[in-house]
Length: 320
Length: 293
Image (tube, chains in turn red, blue):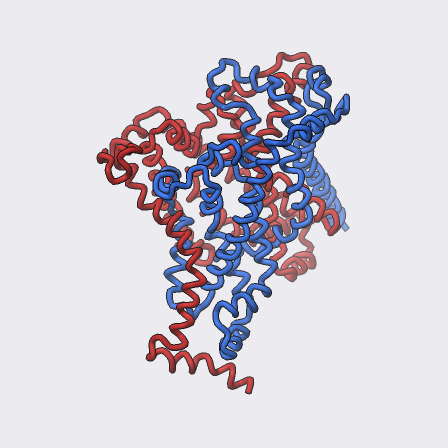
């Protein structure tokens, strides 16, 4: 009886196919119905806006709508790329993201390996809980936290500076500190997640490799460098491909909330997202859209290229 | 013997690093809590301190005496989070089920449709114009709920869980005449509940933490979410821009410092406590999600 059941599906499927709308057709219909809500949302909120990118080629006016507005060719793109802002946001996005990728991976891999060296299950749990706390805080809350340190009058940093006999620093008015401040809060929020990602990858590595290494007399440091790091390459590759694809994408919350919109800091805190948001709120819809479209297209090209390069050297490590 | 000393050293360094790292994660958060319990006078004299010199409940008393605005924000955030999470989880899991079925004829095409949105998007302006000019959802909480509803990432995450359900189970249910709806809701859904819990938690945190969509689409003060309300308390951004010395102004006691921090604590406290209990699902989701899809 059981055996019969196992072979049935294939047989049945073959039988039903020519009938078209038989049992198979009914199943298809039900599957479509199950899919429908998500598909509708996907089409409305992801695919319709893709059509909306024509705004980038128009001189968009609210009153005329998308189709009524006059064509502007590539004027919007020209306007952006000729402006000083273009240099600033491109430089900032590139520098921040490269720094984030490089330091982020080094720190999180090092800490993930350290976490595996903590044998007490209880302590591992405690550390995991601690490092995860910042991850689910919103950028608004983190802006509150940063204010407790950076506030001119009451902030902890200025109290310390003054206690040491120095003059209080106007943190929100001095660009030179901000690359580090932004780097710190980026790491502070995201490292817990990335460490855990690597930590679980390490736990997935075959235990027998480590035992063999131990028998051969490898030290803990040697196993980390010669076994763990190479075994993490697939995870690392995928994360780096995604990182490269997103090299011009920044976390809007980080760059918008933490500097609190201080104009004095704009040179070091302005990225594509803050630029497009500002352009939108100032009514330059078409320019904002042109910048956004450029960002999307460049991102797509980069991720496909990075993936193709990886695929050429190692098929298995590719993302798709 | 030499290697065991080395192992002990590595373990020691690991402990020290993680204790430091743990403190770096924890202490900044405690600063906000500490300030909320510090008297305004003590703040004026000593600045923000991790350990209050002068303990005070004044800020909380003030806050609970006039809870109007924060209650409204709580209500908004609760409505958005609950409605959004329930609908999102149902629709996402249904889509994950369908795209996991090898018998579904459009499986490849539909999966690609979800995947492609991860690679390319229309951007901020087209979405903004669509929502405000065509869907007329300005000042409607539906704007926030709907925009954040479907995350392809979550669809793929759940698909990984669903693929763990034995195919034979589904096939035999089918032979017994069960519809796809019944198979999904009576067999697949209960079997993948831990994955669904993970997605539910991630989604709930996303809705709970939202200030961005709120900032874009809501101008009605009564519909501000908790996070956006907090943002408005941070200091008026335009106001800061217009003024010369930004540092001077951010240090100003408007609204009172402790009250501001107390509002922050009240806004995130409940979710922070809840999160401690559900964290393991979250961690599990990362583990499964790291499998490439």
